[in-house]
Image 1 (cartoon, rainbow over the protein chains, first blue to last red):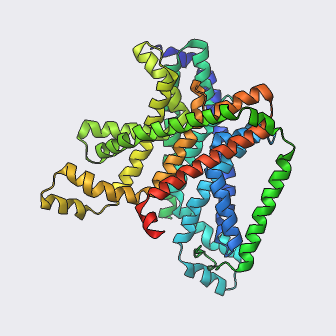
Image 2: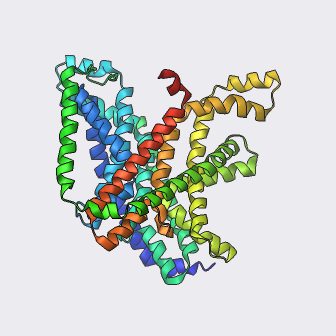
Image 3: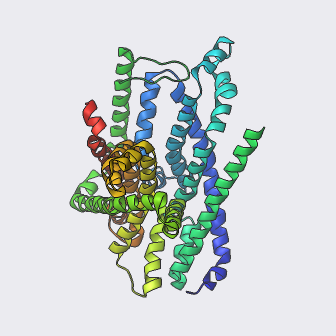
Length: 210
Length: 255
């Protein structure tokens, strides 16, 4: 074991971490927006939308995220980073829409009926009655979705984006110290997951105490 | 098909709705056909046997991972819920670490760890099956644990009163009921495993994903090839979830 390679490659790992975080944050925003949109659409009383969302979820779920990223890169002709972010956002949005949908379903229907009777329109009901409650209820499952995004961001290395997993392979290629690098990077991923879980717990407490 | 209640009331599908849906699907398929019409499908056809063989490799990896991972997952879940202290913490550690790291990283780690510890290079197939089984075991352990916890405690207690041993209670009372409760999560995890095999190409095994990349490197026909790739994975994952749903006793009774 020669652990000093980690120190020698600290700058490479740091830039890899930055890229991983960048991809993760962009994907979080993208998948949350898309997932919220899909989840809201699912609440509308339309058979057509219901079926369309079902088809969307089935297609997205049954294709590996790597394949989606490659498809966007090679077929749609996007650059590496947009392809990775968009592919991962599409992938995660189907799961996030499910999480949010169960959040919507846990809110009693009387609430939207009452708001409806008070003369609010659909947009107002979504924005002021349903979504704030859904956001609080779904915080814990959303945390695990965000951790999932960190994990899936490793797929970006296959397009040659120099994020953490890419650096692992790079260290192995240059020094044959793959084990040390893989262990160190695994620890970095673990601490990222812990960071997200911790942040979400703090956020949840803060909201509950208010 | 029953339409569920939503925040804005439920809608029973009318005939018009159903026809509109069918029309939309037909339109979408036609557009897809039009877009894909001019592509060089002969490239895909020429590599047909190679692609089918590599798809078989993907299935083989999935089935091996599930075959080893499910018993190992049940064992891990058992250790986590009822294991003696050191084993219990080890089980928790393995499950949580594997579930919090990217699958790609787990594969790399196994691939690098074995040579680093033993000094021998590990064959790609061994590394692939070990890492996929490890991933399957960790994810399935949590599925099994949730399933086992969904079985009321009184069932175990009744078993104890009747004089059954712990092993008998687990294998013939708790596990069959737990298996039934965890079918949806099981389907999701099995489909996830099939999707995870697409990452195994990093250790150099020619699975479906790598086969398509290899052909694309030679021919550069990305549209035809990657459409085939996506369609292939979709069909296989769909088939896998269909099969598991068929095995569900509740489903068999309902239909």
